[in-house]
Image (spheres, rainbow, N blue to C red):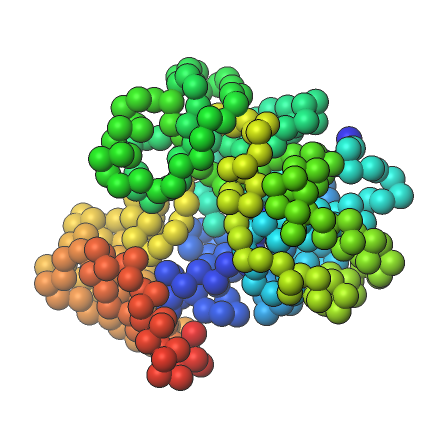
Length: 375
């Protein structure tokens, strides 16, 4: 059995603007360590899966930046989506690409895939590896689709949920697997509290596992407009050189352009009958916006996160990131409470923490005013 990993890294990370830009989005930022989030994602899995079997699916604009960031990964393993079409077409493309890579050695029934993301905080690594080992074993021996569910630590309105029949045990060393009852959208607080108290609801991590034959067959049934394109793309890929086909290939581009914009959750996971969830043994968080850095980076005695050259007076509960590099710049904060301040070489953001989810409004206004050089 050939085990592979697909890391989806095509997001724009708009809620991290102005740190995140079109050609250097969140996954290419070193937010929590001296490594980018994408490098950390590779590190987590590279000791378990060979680098030659790890694939990055990204956008055309990020193809070369990612290849530069990951010089140790074969360049042909970084694959550009022809167009932005959400995760279902993305993973259909990945299935076709991987099948074509191993076409002479492994049939789809002998290739298993872990679908991972580039913007999660996961620790410890040993517990992550133990969890994905269980998930791999299960999908390799059963014709099912699998996901990883995170036991909630509190009511949370920012994540989707997975319903199961019975609560998992509290044993943090035992990776249990159950059939999924329902996938649920992000709830309001009252519903999230209900899910938390009942115990048989998990956070949806957005990580998936399957054999290629299982994925292909299920996607054909659930969403034939996408599923039926996999074999066509595989045959086209099989006749191209590796580096060329991972960059741009007109026949693939034409097929991909016709695909609908839909997530893998809607297109497949919510429709498929045989879906299981593995309990995560690791600690997990999704770095979705600037305020999610709170609790993950060191703070001063007033609960401020301060990066760069800053002085903070009578200021508390703030996140201040001064990343100006081209010249010396001191930021002084006076009397601030619950604010986010980000300074870059060409843009500054000042925002109350409770407005951080509205940063996309700034992005929209920048576009409306034609100021796209700042995106």
